[in-house]
Length: 320
Image (cartoon, one colour):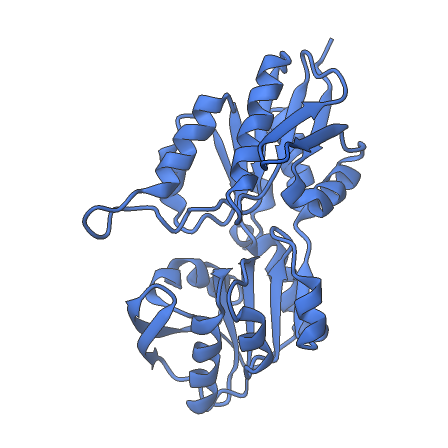
């Protein structure tokens, strides 16, 4: 008898998990995330998962409770005799801490990977890690999905005649080059110099953008400082329009305010992290920030993981 599939959600990704489960064709499993008065978390599975393939969906954005909650869910599933425990982390937090780039700092991405393994996870399914080599931090299989499968159809629908892609920094060039190659389009780079995290000292554009419809591509939009300054600089250099496509809408600090005051024609993000609907309404961003769902893509990845099938067909940019 084949093991059953059970899909559960942490509190950080309930809306997306519901969409993934609907796309997969099964209801979300019943779980209670109990909190004590001091904030201590205790997840309780409200149905048997003995011998089942258990998928736990939780993006690990701030606060840190999301990570702790996921770890406790893994431990509870292991102690409830699940056959396999697959953690689905649409946004993998701490991925920006992927190397020791200065003395006396932690490599946060490696630490989180080690903790997930120690807790009892058998596999990870995630999307657009800040640095793809983070997959090497794990001693278990990692299915690393690519948001280009979501963004490319959207961009094709725009039918922009003078399409050019832009990398908001040098570190994004490989990601942007893949999508630009799919469209046989040109690419430019916004080279920035930082004083410290989230603070840009200077920026220059490498490449000609005159009369072009620019699309900025990045994996994370945090305070939106880099992105909005890149957009303004591109318009100053003669761009016809600037749009941005960012996978993970962290959107901290004054991000919503920055986007509202920017020259961006639109910002397209994935639903790996839920948006702050109050701030969208406050800054009247309903027509400026668009969401492209990753639910169908993750549902296929879940099914392929369960059926031991390849996920190569999920990468659109590899088909041309």
